[in-house]
Length: 118
View 1 (cartoon, rainbow, N blue to C red):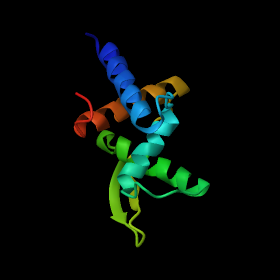
View 2 (cartoon, rainbow, N blue to C red):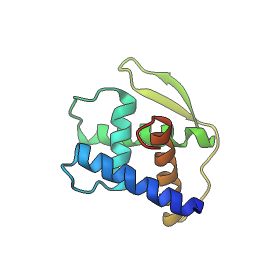
View 3 (cartoon, rainbow, N blue to C red):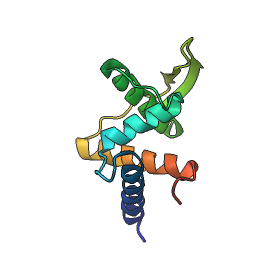
């Protein structure tokens, strides 16, 4: 199986499992999954977040997802226990489709590492 086929299968599995678990079967999109990862990384699962915090949660997720690629590095937790990352290397310019593939790959790797999928 090619790398692209494996990524597609694993991505579809992540979407299916998360959609069943968090969206009553409605299909979650990439942004919704990034948001869920941000909530997971913050560790405040039962809390409701305001709109500006939702953007911050997505930023946390993106930093965490791209950390293994060398773009970000965890720095510290603030007094409210929010994680902060520092930029290690600027992200290269990517077309929208390339960004989507990178994020899907990073999400799949995140859930493989967490043993949510194989």
